[in-house]
Length: 156
Image (cartoon, rainbow, N blue to C red; front, side, top):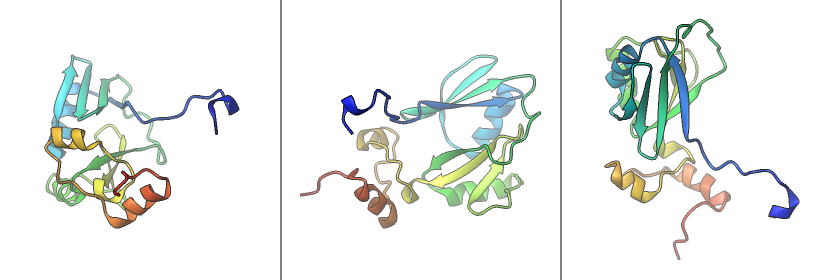
């Protein structure tokens, strides 16, 4: 498709996901108990959880958790999903009865955990290096999915 074929913008990625939480301090405490991360910024009503070149925005609202949706969720990519699974067990956070690794935060936000090596999503090498994750690799199936789309570096 050329630019003249369609006047729509192309999706490039996700800048951030915003989650409604009841309290910023409690939300940060919960997520810090599961994940290692830094903060981009925070205020009394918002916090921005850093993920290298992306972030999750936490926003305190009075009605957080009032509506629970079984289908709506977001996926977090991690370097080691097994570590998250162990932390969930240690902290007695209930996993959802679905294939894969999913749970709800204290406000009902449904979180899916995905291992970086398993999926097409790819961080640029310089971003991984800056995050201290330069040795993170993809499994063959994920690389094959990327190759089918022509999204792997030329290795010739």
